[in-house]
Amino acid sequence: MDAAEVEFLAEKELVTIIPNFSLDKIYLIGGDLGPFNPGLPVEVPLWLAINLKQRQKCRLLPPEWMDEETFTPMPSPYYMELTKLLLNHASDNIPKADEIRTLVKDMWDTRIAKLRVSADSFVRQQEAHAKLDNLTLMEINTSGTFLTQALNYMYKLRTNLQPSESTQSQDF
Image (cartoon, rainbow, N blue to C red):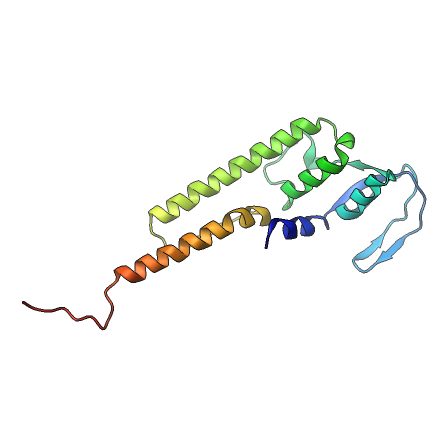
């Protein structure tokens, strides 16, 4: 799965908007949305919120975890993608957008650094498997190729170092 596919999945996350238009309930395959009344908050998928925002049909409300005061370590499984999309398309609706961008980037850098340290420890200890809990899809996507290739090379090295069964020792 590449970054674009992970971002596509993140676009299904619900966000709150305040529409400036009236519309009855919309019936979609993924579920019903609305009704939309001016000034009344409604939850919609991120893809629809961005579309409406781009057409100046709504104002986006930032998710609770995107508040500088109440920031938590794992706010959403798609925290990086949501932040990127919301800040790129609706930064005018998000208070302290620059500070939030910095906080999320710092959190990303910290989590990736921890992942690198864990991978380094795993390789140094010559383990056969590892358990990585609480990773987001984007973090797996970012490090997955590297870890998979590293494990593959470790396997090849181990199998080449072990004496094969067909080789017999010779006595001199």
